[in-house]
Length: 321
Image (cartoon, rainbow, N blue to C red; front, side, top):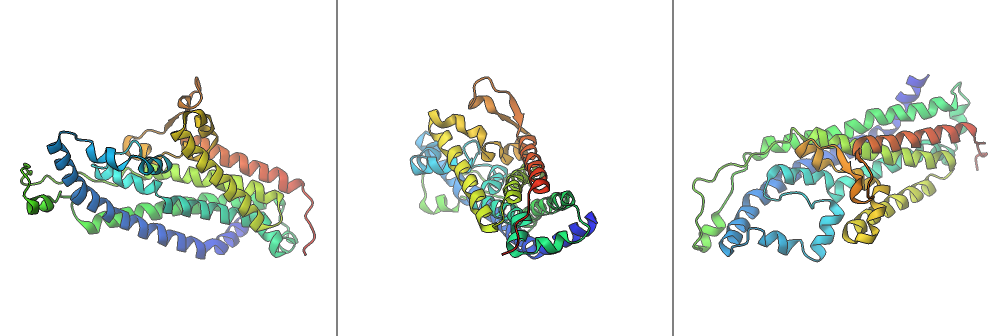
């Protein structure tokens, strides 16, 4: 019966899943091209001019000052090197479009898991079958284990497709040649090394991020009866976490709030570039241990599902309106 439920739930989410996968595939492909333009046409020219001026970090210091510093903190780009194509590719997993799609999918699907069925009046029909309530929660858990990796793989496939079609990353100094500055231009320019093969490690962190949000939302859904109220509460919690994590990076007294947010443990760029899965909680909480970010996020998701299981199996279901 569990398998039948999983197939039914998968059929329900299939159109939305295809749409999300197409969006992430297209964005990942576009991001490869953006990475090529920035690291091949813009950054090399800036670096040569900055070296000529005697300050190799001139342009990064100018760009990431004031509002740029806020953006850098909010998006988690602080430790990334804009000169390296792999670093710029890693930024794609931290882009607002990717984060928004992750939140929209996790919140939207999980909010409809219990509260959505009650809201539509279809829960009574579903439970009129010989289906224990715990099997319904298990089925939603299994669907998450299927669809979340598919979403992550669609992004990886888009990156690989983009790398296959854009060609090599060869620095272009034609802009400097046109203005004829007294700067020595490398001839011939050396192609930059680029590879997206480390991206699955980062996308494992993306899986954990979505699973944590999904677990939190299904816990709220198991206690509610209005899908839109559950969506509102879940989105509010995620937004508060995002703001707290951003402020904690910019303002030292608020740094203690960061480990209480999902975004603090979402660091796919470190996993992709360095194979580093650990998050230094001690930076915010003195004396705290270093924790594996993915395991923390997955653990939060599991706790959310356990709360949903306990709540849903013990609650009285309201009569349909």
